[in-house]
Amino acid sequence: MNCLMRRSQNLLLWRNSCVKHRSTDAASANRNAAGKLSYEEFIGHQQKQAQRSIIVQVSSEKSYPELYNYCSRFGSILGAHHYCVRQDEALHYVLLEYSTSGEAAAAIDSGVSNGDLCGVPVRSPFLWFRAPPAGSKRSPNLAPSGTLPALNAIDGGRVMESSQLLALVRGAQSIDEQVLLLHKHTRLNDLGIRLRFLAALQVQQAISGMFPTAQAQPFGSSVNGFGKMGCDLDLILRFNDDTGSQKGLAVSEPSRLVFHTKENLSNGRSQTQRHMECFGDMLHLFLPGVCHVRRILQARVPIIKYHHEHLDLEVDLSMSNLTGFYMSELLYMFGEVDPRVRPLTFSIRRWAQSCGLTNPSPGRWISNFSLTCLVMFFLQQLRQPILPTIGALAKAAEPGDSRVTEDGINCTFARDMDRLGFRSRNQSSLSELLLQFFEFYSQFDFHNRAISLNEGRALSKPDHSAMYIVNPLEQLLNVSKNVSMEECERLRIEVRNAAWVLESEVENVALPVSEGERQEHSWGLLNLFKHPEKPLIRPNMFFKPRMVEVSDLFEQKELTPSPSTPQ
Ligand code: CTP
Ligand code: MG
Image 1: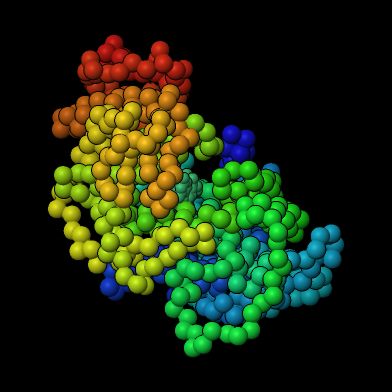
Image 2 (image 1 turned 120 degrees about the vertical axis):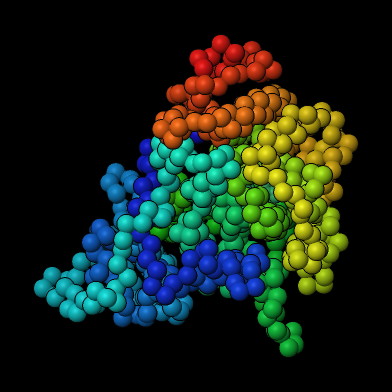
């Protein structure tokens, strides 16, 4: 909660300007001539891009021509992005992308320590651009304006103000278009992804001297295509690489020289906790930008949380959650298989957030990840499924798809969906699917049934958890074990309300409404999103009597519409 409050106080004010010179962006990078990048290719592309990039703090965007001119001596700059982080005052940063990682390294290596300030200098992609020494000439030969990628005013990285977003979504022509607009304007964009991979690279480079094979790999919503602007970064620090990214390296003969290692007598978990404690100290004491380091070492997956002040980013670093990494791959693949999957999930996640079903801090409520699993399961069990089952993907695996984690968990499944030959014949529109989702879970027997994405059908519940979602990769675990009876009941009530509201909205949209009325009032998707200050209720909306009253079950933040609500 604290973190949330701090976030809203220090409201991240991304004033990003994204300049394309000969650069790429995530959208184009995600597609190749044949169609799509696999998850591993996508991750590899982003990691390489991060290795070619540096982030330089400047006094304002006006410093950019001088910075460009200065930094061009190290190599060819492909593109530049400007963003701000607001603390007491706006801090300005420019991300420069070079054409090679060697050029970026040369720029970093030219960095010097700041003699005036204390602190051990650390090699990292985070630098600042100081004024030239007194008496020296400022910018002797500025680049001709034609060759300089000018910073323009594209707001590519900013979390859009909710009033602006509401106005945009109101202006849509249909509920389907509203769903698409919401996705388009709230999903994590190219700059957001770049910054997250730079945060990962910073950790990796910081420890590379002692741990040359260590990899800091982003996973979760930052890379699975379900992340929204401002989402946290989940990072796994790995010391033995067994992902596909390294598998391609042909080793003619295994080396006969083996690293000596330090023997540890304690068990694996306490050893990991001890190591993480040590990394936590290292990050806290030395890494520029890292602050508010918290160690949560008793959790099932021990993590170190920190805030990155140059990126205004919350980071969760783990060392033992490789299934989470592969789970992100599954979600990425699901998002790629059908263009309706991500926009639909974004609307559902936004709806859940607006009615308080989800909350950024962990607790007895459903997490975004569990909610995403509910959406994926819904899309699998349709009469005309939109997603294949994970079991089918596991069956279609080939030898190259084999992945087994260090603790022996099998994460083998076909990485290429095309191999399944799965083609959905489902033609439902986004609004139809949204309504079907709410109706499906209004009826779902959470009391007796467990959700299995592996099989794409409900199973008998193996224990008394309120909600049971079989963890697809660790099938003895329940993804939604944390959810309490009350929260599960609240979900059931809210999906029934949402089904009811959306049904009315779909009927209303068919009525002729003037453009002005559409712009002025919340309608369609927006009426699903309850708002504490003003209930988003369309003036001419009639409520049906099957509205479920929730007020006697829990304290509500917002008004539950009743048949007597002003129309
Ligand atoms: N994960 C998992 N099993 C869980 C919880 C999480 O496999 N019980 C994996 C998933 O791949 C998930 C990732 O860990 O995407 C990160 O978890 P979390 O941060 O909770 O969810 P996100 O998907 O990143 O969503 P958010 O934007 O809310 O952070
Ligand atoms: Mg996350």
